Image (tube, rainbow, N blue to C red):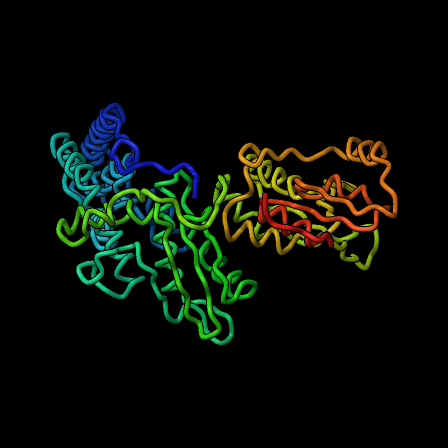
Length: 444
């Protein structure tokens, strides 16, 4: 895996905290507290108390129930104010992202029950500073929890840490359904890996999709996930094997070392000196938001007919997808795979000359498409491909070789020849070529 991965340094892994934002928050708190004190002082006066009963009576008659007049007790109001601003203060940082579930729930309970401490400047700054300083501890506890859940052992009994294959039991059942608990642990691991890779984080059901695709389409085969950062192999009995790429495993082990300084030898916490045996190319990780839309692509129908005839080899982006930046990147992916945008009466879809579903599922699972720069891949425009084939004077007696086939733009124009052999180094492009019916040699 050659995708860019960040080293374990706090300046890169953890988000910076702005003191200016804390200053602004404390200033707003003080203003709201002063306004609250003025309101309580006013409603405690004779003018307010002498007429409030009329407003209560009016509310009762209008809504046929007793009016819900606030008590205006300063103590209760300040407790709610403190809770609100503590929540805002914690949200200014990324501590909640790294905080262990138990600790995070304790904070949420204090806020929800209005039992948070007073939002006093020195206490706020001291608490935030302490929590920010503990982020590495929080992250280590989270990674340790993931390791125990996935490996079913303690790191002291497995010094290789994440460098050893892990066997997950009961990932799926006989009906193909998945275990939310097991896929949840896998998702936690992918969230940490996403931080290393500088990506957005997968949503809660992203790993469910990976398991579904691996079990249904690649049972018993290794399936790369997140650009090869890890790989999974699902079996008929519901179990799965999981391996973390060495370039990731040592980083995860380094985090575990923070919690258990003597448990993992240094050789398992250093970047591997030798490259892995499998030849892997640089691939461009897609945002998880884009993968989510790709997973939810709908079928396209011919709306000109009342029967809504299904259009073969076509997909469409569902109309409820609203993020224009995500949609733009999804469209780029579909075009890279050979899709051509079609439109009828504002009804849009992408038409392919092969079934794109298996290839799209592979992208959803692996999280990547071939990087055009690293592959030196630039799709040949149709008119240029047509002219090139004409100049080559290819006839029915010729056996043709396309040594860098891409997704077959040039080969598509060689229909008159006897046979075509396509050579393609990208696994994804090779899948596209095979889906089109070409014989493919996978290599460079």
